[in-house]
Length: 441
Ligand code: PMP
Image (cartoon, rainbow, N blue to C red; front, side, top):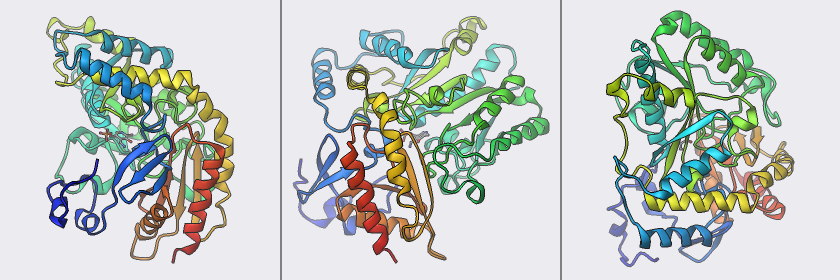
C-alpha cells in the first residue's frame, strides 16, 4: 500500500516508537512489501532481511499458510471474549506450544506482546508466593543490560539506563545483578563464553542483603538480545537455577527473542538445558504477523493458584485480546510451518556456517568483538570518542542503501535472519556488511 498523501506533513501524525522522529522524517525509510527473505522499499528496491523484522519473523515474510489461516479465522470467528468464555483455537494453540516446550512447562497464559508477557510473569510470581502463604516475597531481581519490554515492571527489572531514565522512580523493591559481558576475557568467543559463571554468585549477595523470604523472582534473558547479543557464560544459568531453587525464589527466563527456534531448539531452555519456573514469549509465536505473547509456567506455579485460597482461584489478570482467535489461528499456522519445514533443526544445522561467516569479519576495520549462537550474532565496533552509537548507526544506514537490513544498539550491530536463510544469503549479508564496515570513518 502506498501513502496517498504527498506533502511532508503527512509524516507528522504517526509518533514513531523508539525512533528519532525528527531525523527519520527528513529521510524516511519505508517498506511497502515483503516476501520470504526480502523487504521491498517504497522506491522498489529489495532489502535482504538480516533481522527477521524485529527478531520475530522466524519463518520469513508473507507466508501463505499463515495469511490464509488468518483470513479463514477472521471470516469464521473474529473475536470472542476470553473472560469466562473460550474458543477452540486458543486451547489448540496452548497444547501445541506445550508440545514443543521443555518437559516441565505445562500451562500457557496469553498476552499480546513481550512487554505484557513480562508484566504477567512478574505479577504471577508475586501472587504465587501469596497463594502459598508467603506474601512477604515481593522483591524482584533483574540484571544490568537486561531488556524486558517497556511497561513499568519490565523497565524496573530491566537494566538499560536509557530505557528507564525518562520515567521516574519506577517499581520499588528491585535489585539488579551484574551483566555477564566480559570483553577483556571473552572477546571473539564462538558460542557461549568460558568466563563469568561466578557472576551468578552476586545473587547470593542480594539474597543475604534482603533475606530470601522477601524475594519473589529473578528474571533474566537466557541470552540478552536487545543489548547486543550477550551470551550466558558456561555454567552461569545452571548456577542461577541452583541458587534460586535453594532459596525458594522463582526463576523466569525471558525468551521473547530466543523462543521459537532462534538458537536451534524450540526454546533456549532446551538449548542450555536449564528449566526455569516460567518463560515469557512473544514475537516468533505468530511469526511476528499478529501481536501475541504467552507466559509458560510449570505445574507447580499453576497449581499454587488452583490449590490456593478460595479468593485466588480466579487470577485477577488478563487482557481484552488474551488468546484472540485470529492471533491464535496465526500461532497455530506458524507452529505448523516451523514443524513442516523443520526450521528449528535447520537453524541448528546452519549455526556452524553462520558462526564461521560472522567470525570472518574479525580483523575488519573497527571490529572489536564478535558473538554468536544459533542464528543470531553481533559485531561490536570501536565507538567514536564522544559519539557512541554513531559508527554503528552510520553502518545501518549504509547497509540499508546497499540492500541489507541490520539492527544496531549502541555501537553493536545485531543480526538474526529468518531461519529460512540460505548459505548464499548468509554470504551476501556478511559480505555486504564487510564492505560497509570498510568504508566507515
Ligand atoms: N523481552 C525481551 C527479551 C525482548 O527482546 C523484547 C522485545 N525486543 C521484549 C521483552 C518486549 O517485547 P514487545 O516489544 O513485544 O513488548
